[in-house]
Structures are given as structure tokens and as C-alpha cells.
Image (cartoon, rainbow, N blue to C red; front, side, top):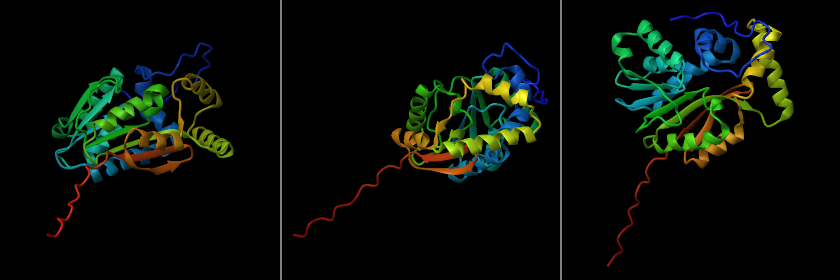
Length: 259
């Protein structure tokens, strides 16, 4: 397992290619995401705590876009030992790093509670999920596929089960968006990124990671049939959401007429 300082964009590169979760990103990913995403180290364990609150014993949680397994590890920590986790990512280097990291940091029993899949989350089977967690992943799905994916998730959640996810978002007010962008830039500078690194990563990722507005997220959750959606965490132009599969309708008893 290799973890290094993120210097991928530290040197001027006139031939930038689109951002991808290849081996060089996997090797620096913990450093990259900590220095790039405000409150990442808060949202990941909180999302696991939220999931643990709603998942019954012997349930199965899907971690979609699991990357190096940070959310999966948090789920193992906070959920009942009977809970199993299915970690899915379409990057084989990410899955390899996640499996190795889990084996190194947890007991053999805990590591055995995880099924790792290198697969496309828009196609891999999801069945009777007690919860689905999807942190910083939907934004990398092409916009036209997002509702389709959420509809698949919604139709495969157990009744009352939650979908929990976090994303970069676009704020409705342009002035608030400009302010959030400026503070996010300062956040990256404070974490040691140079102007060149910020500019080159922006150029590499802007066609790959396309954020939605808050209203788009909430409206889409309703459209796919999920209920009681809410924003449970926000920081600058980053937000975390939760929505639930509907519970079965409780049949009403009609009193018999006298006589």
C-alpha cells in the first residue's frame, strides 16, 4: 500500500488529460482529498454514524464509489458487527488499495465482512440494501445517468432504508457561489497547493466532475420515489444528503356498520 503527497499537478504540463482515478491518483488520494474537500474528515465518519442509526442487525450496506475504503472502514467501526458492506468502485487500483488497507488496519473478522467489487455502479447488482452510502461519487456520473442510477438505488433499498451521500454543489445565488469558490480556493492554498496546481487540476477535472444545484438534488430524490430528503451537513459549496425508501402503507381498518 502506497500513500504519498499529492504533487500530480505541481509541474507545468501543456498536455493535460482529463482527471481519472488511475494508479497515480490512487497513490496520493488520501492526501489529495483531505487537502481539496472541506470537512471530508468529518463527513465520512458522520455518514457512517448516520447509516448505523438506521440499519438493522444482519443488514447489508452498499458503499458506491468506495475509493480506498475510508467510508467502508467507518461503517465497520460504527455499525453492528453483524453488518456486511459491499464496496464498489470502477477503478481496480482503488479496489486493490482498499482491500490492502482494510486487511492492514482491521481484524481478519472485520475484513471478511466486506465484499469488494471492481464494477460500474450504474450496472452492478444492488439487492435488498439496508442502506446505500455514496460519498463524492454522483458528481462523477454523467448528468444524464444520475436519475437512472438513483432510481435503481431507490428500487433496491429495503423499506425505510436510507440513501446517504455527499457532493460538491452549485449554490443558487451567484454571489454566494462566488464567495464559496473564493473560500474554497483559500482552503486549497492553506493546504499547500500552488496556483499552478489549482489551475491545472481545475482544467483536468472540470469536464469530469459536474456538480448540481441543491434544488436539483432534492427534486431528483423526490422524483425517483425517495421520501423525507434533507441536507444533513453543509460547508461552503459542499453538502451531504439523506433520503429514505418509503415504508409500506399501513392498511386501515374500516369499522363495521351497526346492524
